Structure formats: C-alpha cells, structure tokens
Image 1: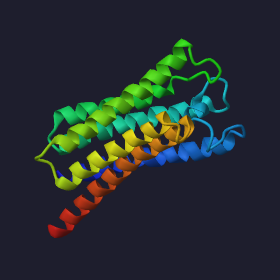
Image 2: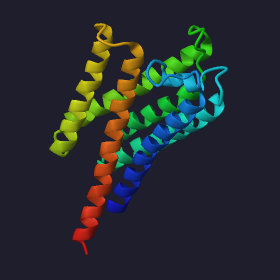
Image 3: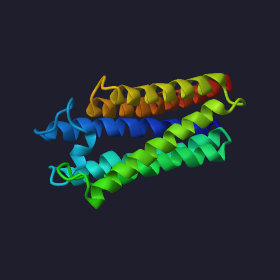
Image 4: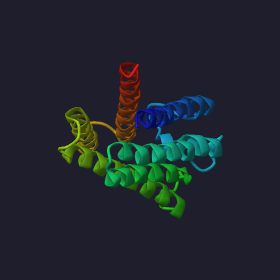
Length: 200
C-alpha cells in the first residue's frame, strides 16, 4: 500500500514537472509566444513551430500520466468513483492535443480542443467536490480539495466580472489544477517515506 502511494505520488509529480518543462522549453523556442498574453494551447496550435512535439509531450504525455495518477489516487483512497472522475480529467487533458486554430475558433478541430479541456476541468472539479464531500476521508485531504475547488471557481468568476483577462484565467486554472496535483503527490511521497521509517 505504501509503495503504491509513493509511486502514485511520483507519477503525479512527474506530470507537473513535464508540463512545466514543456511550457518553458517550447515557449522560449517560439519567439511569437507570450508567457503573459497567450494561451498555452497556442504552443500546440495549427501552424505553430514545434506544435506536434508540444502536443505529444505537453498534452498527450502529461494527459496519460494524469490518467494513471487519477486512477491510482482514487484506488489509494478506496474510491472507484473518484478514480473515474480524475482519470477522465487526464483523458480530457490528453485530448487537448487536438490542435486548435488560433485564427478560426469555429473549426471542428478547434471546437474539439475546447470541449476536451472544458470536460476535463469539469471532471476534475467534480472529483474535488467528491473528495471534499467524503466524510470518512482525512480532514486535511477534504479541506484542501474544498479550498482548491473554491479558488478555481473564484478565478473563473474574476474573468466573468472583468477583473482579469481570459489568458490570466487560463494561467490561474492551470496553476490551481497542477498545484493541487503537486501538493497531493508530494504528500503521498512523504507519507510513504514516513511510514517506511517508522517500520524500520
């Protein structure tokens, strides 16, 4: 059980590290990409340099890791429904590799890209809500899930109210989602190490 938790944590942390590395690497390679004003999806958009590689590494690879992480994390908590929700988020993220057309957002590929990320985020938010609802779970886990879900919703409300732009909202959503993944992963790894030391 403890070894499994450590592996789950490593997979989750790896997904975060690969996404950040891909974003920095391909973002710096694309001279027309702005880390402040552009959507991350632009790096994998139609006719962008290195789009295929960014989609394969930044979306497909990370999506597969998130799928595995979600499936396994739910199993560590003995919650099959949570496994399904979080793994579906991973699938949705992976399908954002469908290249968007930055000039024509109404094309089939662009719509598929947008639907994939929206469904993915919806499943993730539902998963966090489910985590926060489960009274039998550790209070720290539930509180983090609830707080993260609230922050995510507030970031979207900020855009609706015109407090910040959609690109900023986009950054906030990515930071919140992968921030939760990183913290949860680190907690799993530390928990496993602590138990291992106690068993020595």
